[in-house]
Image (cartoon, rainbow, N blue to C red):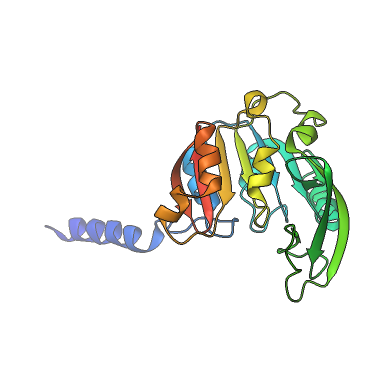
Length: 223
C-alpha cells in the first residue's frame, strides 16, 4: 500500500470513527418515539393522545406532528391544553376527563403542570402530596372523537397515558368505528406472565390486538 492509499484508508477510518452520526433526537420519556419512527412510515395520519401532558417534552406524537400528521390531544389540565393550542394549533386540543361512561370523577394534582395529575380511583385515598383536588365530568373517547374534525375516521395511532386509568379510556372507544392501527398503553406489571393475565391485555387481545413491543411502562399493540 503506497502513501496515498494509506492516507485515504486513514481518512475513511477517521470518518467512520468521528463523523458518522451516532445520535438521534428523542422526545418521549422512554424512547417510544424512536420505536415509532421505525414503525410509522406513512407521511400523513391521525393520532389520538390521551394524557398528552406537554406538546414536545415526553411526547410520543410530537415527531408525527412535525412530519405532517394531525390529531386529537386530550388532558385533564386546562393549562396543559392551552400550551398545546399555542404549540400545536393545527391539532384538536381538548380538556377532558376520559372514562368509560359519562359521570363525574375526582381529579387530584400536586401542582399546576403536574405529570402525575390523575383521576382518583373509586375508593382510593388521594396520593401523598397531591392535596389539590377537583370534580370533573367524564366523557368517553368516542364522544370526544365524534365531536372532533376526525369523526368517523380511522385512527393510525392511539396513545394513552392516563395514570392507571388506561383501561377505562379503552372501554369508552367504539373500536368498530375508529379501529386504531397501533395502540400504546401503560402498565406497571413486573413480568410477561403478569401482563398476559392482566385485564388490560385481555381487553386488547379480545379486540384483535397483539402486543409486539414493551418500552419502559409502555406496551405496543398492533391490530
